Image (tube, rainbow, N blue to C red):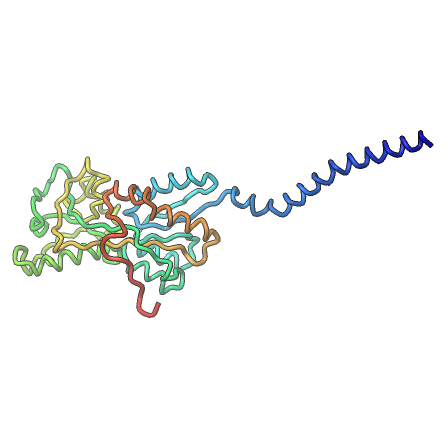
Length: 293
């Protein structure tokens, strides 16, 4: 009896020991099964598609690199172009997650197209216009009035592009100023040799000497400071460009899209934009939604 009792106790101990090992293991597996999918999702590779105005290329590239460093699983892919073209693409169903426009008008095109919720739009930066000409200055431009001289080859962005409309606004204001004269706008427009699809195209043509002058954002001029010279446009004649940003409704990565927008609005993001000449989004005019939105 003593032998059987000892053997039974031994078997019981082995079984108890096995249970002590197996039960925690099963519990761990069950917890892993419950938590695994959501935990894995946070580390899965994600591509975030950001549609942004061409004038944002340098600043947003830096912000995108910093965002990737902070979120190694996220690759930020940019589509830079004229805000009008980007708004059209988004309304046509292009796979965008974030839209950053160079003016309110084109953001509202996306809002009215049902692709952006107006309450989600935030102003993140401001910009202003300057006149640029090549360093060798073949047309001998020294003042804003010189844009109206006969024989000057001028390039502007198309009117549908924000910077193109801002340039026309400047010419309209200048024509009402006695120091320019009522015929100033018409005389300048006669010198336009091409209307470009975006501000980068205007900058490139002038920097390469393919045009005598152009009108761009000050932020763009800074990126080609070794190739172009600038003439400031007075505040009274200038236009303050408002840059709004928002997530796109159909995004499958809404949480990541909002994280990117937060990065743009953060102190670090604003410092990066300031480095390229942008003015803080918190100062100056703010986004206004379309009527009825």
